[in-house]
Every structure is written in structure tokens, then in C-alpha cells.
Length: 307
Ligand SMILES: Cc1ncc(COP(=O)(O)O)c(C=O)c1O
Image (cartoon, rainbow, N blue to C red; front, side):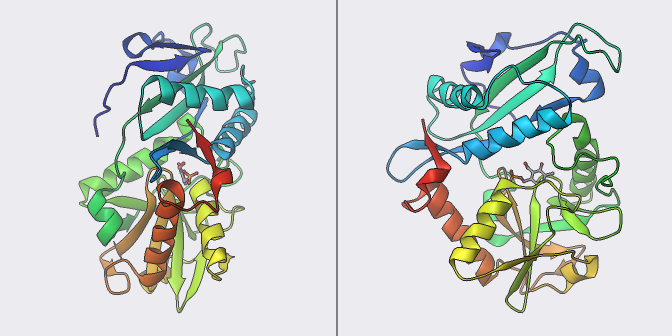
């Protein structure tokens, strides 16, 4: 998926031209992966306005990721939120994906060096359905990866930390080479964890379940949105461990994520899920989700930051 270039990127407090937003090849993060990022979406809503979805929660998680990495953010939560709004406005995008990144720049190369400057950037660009428009409608095909999520003792699963995505990128690449749309990852004990960039929900006999946040998963903001929207429909989501074979016999499976939004899964490891199409609960929560992020729902305005 190529990036469609826009005019400017917010870098260390100012908007700079897209082509000059670069760093030295010896930037610390590029070598060792200690950097933190977010993925956020701004939607063009039915009322014609543009709003960033759950911006505050994304920036809070970005700052939590900084804390996990012992990096002091040079900017406050309010300044980072404003940076996101400014970069979307400056590039005149009605809808886009936002990518804030706080990283260690050029200055020192030792693993433990504290002298590298902490740099901050926010980019935005147009980005359609991550797992395809067809995937959103009909569902996607997944395989379970042999690459597990890192254990709680070594993985910093609650942060979105650059270097920690190597396993996810490899799992995703292997799935694509094997003809699947996405990889699902297990935890070190063999229980279902999540997709490479999505949380997972499983429906059986009307009961909806998802792994708890204490598992080796990212505490997804779309996951929380889905749990809230389902609760509003009177459907309680049970947060408990899920075994691999429970996926194979599920009535419905869906993935949630800022990039993937709410995407049904129609096949896992060549097992057809339910009737091999998006099920009723998945369609219901997906419809509610799109109404909240870009439709005419006004009950969840506290989740919106207008640009
Ligand atoms: C590993 C992982 N899990 C889950 C998610 C979904 O999180 P969110 O809904 O906050 O985008 C993401 C994406 O940020 C992710 O990278």
C-alpha cells in the first residue's frame, strides 16, 4: 500500500515540508527499535465535518508507551493532541490516518546511551480500509501464525513500541505469502492473543468473548469501543482466555483496530467460520461503529475531536 504524499509533517513543534522531514541514518531508533507510535483515524462525518476518533485515548497510550520505554516526551498531552489537529488541518484532508512517532534521534549509538535526542513527529495521509473494502463486507481469511506474542516477562505488550513489531510484521508477511489476509497470534501458553495489528472477538451461541487486557495483547481502543457499543445493545463481552480450537468452532469471529476498524473473519486455517460470511452480531456492531465514527450518531461526541 503506497503512501500518498501530502504537503507537510509536524516535526518537533512545527510543520515542515513532507520531503524534508527526514533524519540521520544513525538515528538510535532505526537500529534498536526503542521508539513509540500510534495509529489514529480522522473521519469525514455525515455532517461534513472532520473529526479525529478517540484522540485523547490514543495520545494517552502514546505517553504510556513513552513511560514504558523510559523516554520523556518533550510535549504534553494537549500539545500532542493539538499537533494532530494542526497537521490534518494544514494538509486539508477530510479523512486520513495519523501516525505520531516519538523516537530517539541521532546523537549517540550505545545501547544504554541517554544522549540521543527525543524527537516527535506526526504524519497524516489518506488510507482506505486496511484489510480491503471487500474484507469489511464479506470477511477475511486468517491463518494462525507459528510466531507467538512475547511473554509478559519480556514483551511490553501494553505499549506500541517500534521494535516489538518485528514478530507481527513477519507473521503478517508469512500469512500473505501463504495466501491469507491476516495472521492471528497465540500467546506463549497457546491461547489466542490477537491479530498482528488487531484485537480479536469470538461469538458462540450468542456469547461474545475476547482475551482480557492482562493477556499478551495491546489494549486496543477499538476493542474498548466495540465492548462499549455491544454493552449498549445489551450484549456483555466476556473477557477470558480463548483456546485455538474455539476459533474453529465459533459462530462468528471479528477483528478490531484503528486500521482494520471492525472486520469480520470468514475463515481460519481453512475452517469456515459460521456460514463463511459476516454474522449478525458482527454486522450489528460494525454498523454501530461506522455510525459513531462517521455517521450521524451523536451519542458519543465525547469521542470526537473536531478539526
Ligand atoms: C498489536 C496490536 N493489537 C491491537 C491493535 C488495535 O488497537 P487500536 O484499536 O487501539 O488501534 C493494534 C493497533 O494499534 C496493534 O498494533
